[in-house]
Length: 351
Image (cartoon, rainbow, N blue to C red; front, side, top):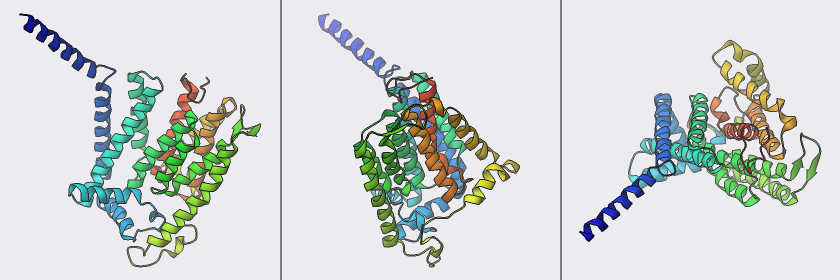
């Protein structure tokens, strides 16, 4: 009788333990996030499956040293991760490309949810913000989709979060070291470290130099990143797939489309299907610039970095290649949250 009573107590304890695991503070929210990531991946595959051969070949050409464009040659982390995954589990490069993106989307969703939850948002709000973030990400899809895109999405979410939390220099150096193997966009981290050396007090002026170590670090790693990028391109690039050199991009490794992009942003986009890109850019920056006078130091740095990234896109990129804005999304989201939601130690929120 006593043994049965003891066993019943153990059973009750086990049942309570299981209930705790699946309670709102346990595993259930992460199961929901996993479901969201699966749905997101499914939508991505529906969007990109017609072009998947082109996407996988683009990554494979980086490994072979024959990318379509010289600027792709230094973007090593994604293609070689796919190659490693392919060899590890014994599947084709194409299958590994698909698995790689599925993993990255899962990591991204878990990361965002963890950040929202860490900052004190209720579970329901955290999931809602994740869905909004995912919706924006899916809305900005383009015909091109590369392995460095989803890595950048993860890294720049960490980057923007680090700005919002005023994390120390080693945090950003870690992201920089990983990011520079993924894409030259990691150079924005060096620019931020230089920017973070200065403090802004209610608006752009006055400016004070308060972190000389941050300024020095940024000044040091920026040329290191540029030299590394140029070195890798020259070392590994053999030719374009047709066997010809990429003479057009040998100087700066990129296009310059400033005048064309300005025309499309303000005029021609409103006569075609790309109108939503112009609306996204103008409304988003219009909102934040309209409120910059009430922004604190951290918020201004999020805004300035998003402007710097956008300036780079409008000069060197193609403004209607909407995937280019993936890395701006975290800055917009955290900036909006810091201005509209009271969160402790998160950009010292004001409203």
